[in-house]
Length: 72
Image (cartoon, rainbow, N blue to C red; front, top):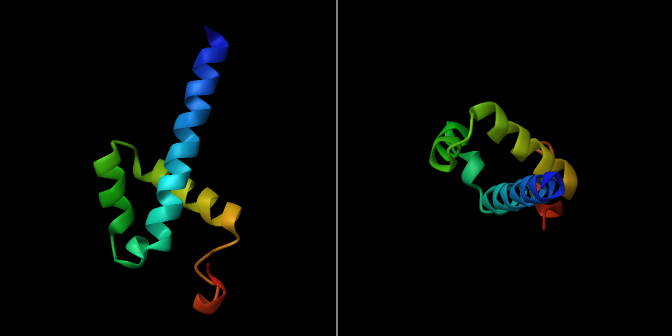
């Protein structure tokens, strides 16, 4: 049962990271106060939302200082 919990938690994290990566790629987070709104819609804390966004950007090598033309 414990392995099942870890797997489902890991999967949920991967899905959220993918969601944040997709939203970031579409420019959603360029809008002011978007992170708290997305967090509320997903039912997670703002801190978790910022953490997922940070992890998604680190995984892709995309950050707020990355030039637009180098983004995929």
